[in-house]
Length: 121
Image (cartoon, rainbow, N blue to C red; front, side):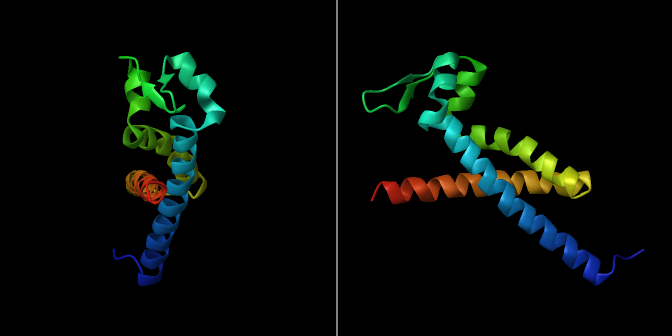
């Protein structure tokens, strides 16, 4: 049985839109957790210390410490529940949800790279 072309195009558009939206949400949440002042209390509780400029610099050798030391890892973990909720709400097939999760984490990582590049200028 072949999927009608309109249904296929609709699914692809939905996957792309959810990937973009979930990725931007994941970037924002991961950014908050990773470096911003709003969650400094959480980073301190995990055992992360700041350098003299106030940026997280010393990470403990624990699972959470390792996770928080890598923005890519943190954004991928953060993107999972965001994507799961969005895919569930959109009644998306689990196979598509996996692709949305991977694409969302890619969007989050790419966005962080662009922000860091802009800040370094």
